[in-house]
Length: 327
Image 1: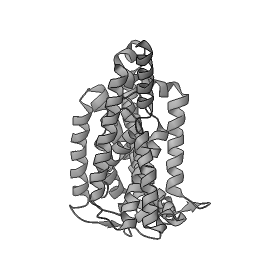
Image 2: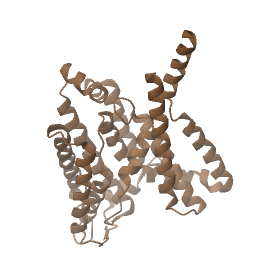
Image 3: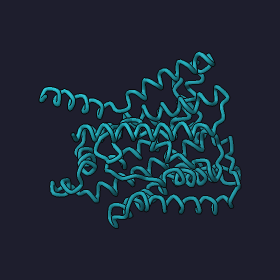
Image 4: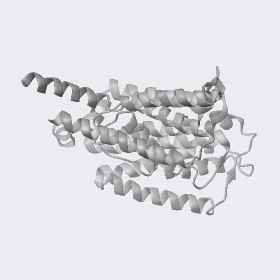
């Protein structure tokens, strides 16, 4: 009987560590089916375009990963992204043409916005769901005021350096993908190789114990939100430079996509467990789903149903695995 319990516990631990492996297998089968239905799906050109598209919410997802590892969340990322993308695009319109401000200003505003989120959650200790939901509403109103409710902004095609950030390539690799990989590499190294990274995991695992261990939990929470805001600012520049235009709702729902990617990548919704590599895998999976719908000519609105189902399934498997491990 004891041997059976030990074996069951080992299986449960494996399930907790690899709780989305079944979903990964389903995605592989899905790719095969899509490729059989449309041969253009596996072409180099299509995959280059796919990677260029996922770079934006991949960058956002890296920031969300840091936040969620502390056991918090950020619902404001999508509308912050939209607001900053519109600001960025404004500075490359024919009437303004200031590439420096188009890049620097979104980064600074994103950093300040992330810092504000961190203060609300870490210092004032508001619930992260409620406070970032309120900030999402704030950014929604701000972008509507900035764009006068429904005005689309179009960048000047002569802004070559700015344009290259979203449309350029180096040795055949899209610049947005390079930016994503650099961001992911830095975040991954920080999490795995630094004291700061270990403190992030500690706060997410048990904040009370982390405080007793001498860790500045408040500082960690404020800092991860600040970094997340900065990365959202960077993503907004990449987003606008890729299409050289901006609309009031262009980034709406990106926070949901980022959250789904992070959970799909194996990060625990309670914090303390997860990594950047898993997040990148989750981002790629969602990119494949989005791209396949376009390739197959399916209704784009179905993506929300599929992504919602994936999130619910991933969370359900995760919670069940953690409960089994607790037994």
